[in-house]
Length: 196
Length: 161
Image (cartoon, rainbow over all chains, first blue to last red; front, side, top):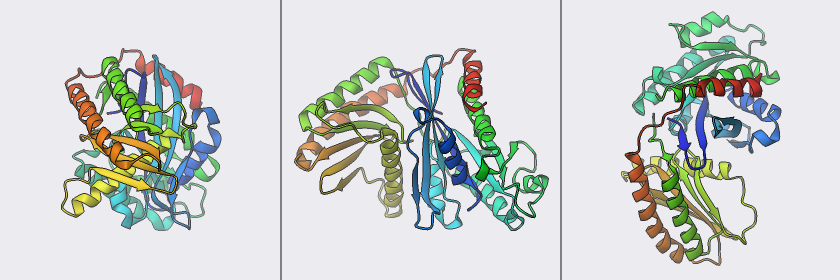
């Protein structure tokens, strides 16, 4: 459930970009940061290693504007994708309102995609949450790399029941980035209006 | 969902604000923030003489994440929690203390301000604010009118095309 401040008339929602290492989660946030006008976003904070791999998280606050008198603010986070940072991933999932799962189209990353989705389910379960309770959008990134796996093949290991909304993306040039963000934002705000 | 959510209604918000204002006056700190465990600022006060604060969104996120990581460490060491964090630099101090399970009180102050004084007054404020947050748990569920969703969709169309 989002944080709602009636006195200040604010709604605050947390969206987390999840997925295997190097799938393009940080690239998504960097693109949003570079394109959204300065007055609608705050500073981007990246807690990364010296070689620019996410160590804890990236963070970008966005002001969407006002809905029915409520200033609506989204906090976008990425998790560290590398397998051994699972403790950090668990912490970042706390309080999540919506998730973008960023899958990698590279031919050698099919298993990594599947393992990351399984890890997401496990980490949500540790917080007592069924993966179906949280709005999730699937972004299949790196569609322009040589030998990119078919989207259906990637989906088959991540979302075999075809329940998630899916977007193809090339986040390095912004392709699909805002479509994905808009979709997950809509799911989160719809859910809020349904009072779930 | 995963974390308890907070909804601060008018009266509660004003009372929290009042307690933070008192704390600011009694301690001489620069900035005083009540942050929820998700990293959102619930209330914020700053001394009139203080320079413009750093980006509060970023401060709140880093404080909440730091608290979450510290709590995970506490659990690994067999502690229920480490309730306070103190980060002291050459110029100033960041002091964070838990307010129940749902919020964190964060104070930023100059080295000239005695930490002991801050701690004593903070304990009192935490008891007051924690009592208000407990009251809020009994508040009625949040209801938005039916056209909230259409308003939100229009906003997203405007922003993202």
